[in-house]
Image (tube, rainbow, N blue to C red; front, side, top):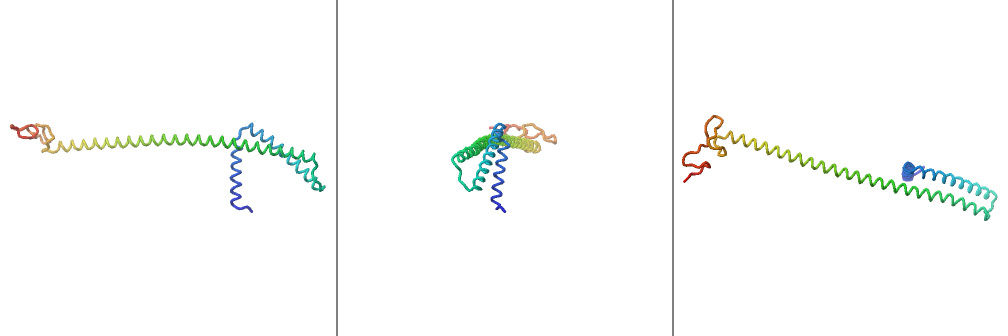
Length: 178
């Protein structure tokens, strides 16, 4: 029947119209309803007059032409006003969508910055933890090593022996005194 493109285009147009109808304010809707009824009536009158003339096989006289022109202006007025309202509604919806998008992007940026701060804090805490662990291990190792020079003079090892005693004639740093 119809090609896929035509069907898709009609669906898109219908979706746009439905969206516009849903978001139009009530006063505009009422105004368009009134204009639509007038335009519908005008179109009907034009069609009836044209059908009657075609059956008679004659052309419209001046009075009929003026009447039909007036009716066509009513139809055009409805079309123009509908387009204006649709354009205004579309513009308003687009502005609202842009505003929402800006807010969403700001919120996402804020979340991302918060996440980065949290990650940096986690890494810093982990580094501090590792440093404390390394320091503790070094302290344990130093205490276990009986030959370690890092102990203070006269300190006992774990068997109770004094290590790093300062002998006579030596400085506490292990060098020979002169």
